[in-house]
Image (cartoon, rainbow, N blue to C red; front, side, top):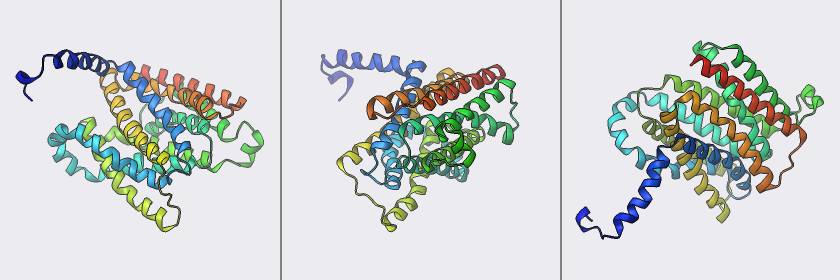
Length: 318
């Protein structure tokens, strides 16, 4: 239908929808808050997935479904970036496998063994781990504020893993799900540091390349799950979870974050990571009815405070 044949009533309706959407796409605060809200909701949904769909099935199908809207959104930039993507294919495969496949698999496995509260709080260590990784592997200056913030954040993570019990810490008696989340956080921090060396392509092209790599590298995981007898045929609830994780965390959250960084810059945008443990804690208690213990309060304060202090140092350096 051409512009000339569009009914008269359609233009006002289209304009009414287009203007708010255009305004929202230009608002970095809104986009970053939404990205963090969706990311926090991921922890809640991962717990709801238990018994509804297998963790490796969810990992593989998540990226398979997400590829459809990601490739559609990235199509214009992919034409321009294809030569660079092809020349650096090994980088994108490694980054997609590390930052997307392995992290997703550990995330969904951990959901069978620990609470949504812990899943929400432990990844709060990622910004501090990124600062450490950038210092060790890239030689990025590490300020006094950054050192203090990283140390405080890690104390918060240790408080969660030990469930506030010094005896558990002394005996290294940690919940296996919490350990998986900590390992996943370390790997994702490595992925984030690796982004510093990314080839010169658009954010959407990179997202598409890594999502494709994540789908391909997750196929052996679902094959293993089926062969080992751990396959769970997705229930109606499992399919709803799949739709959410594919369109929410894997697509919309990434799109919103990429756009927010473009508008606000990486330093200021990174501060919004503080919202993930806050949103996740509220939803875990309010929606799942999980017990909010005293050590969760202490850990949350340490994680958020540590991130804020570390970001203060990062912003001064930037």
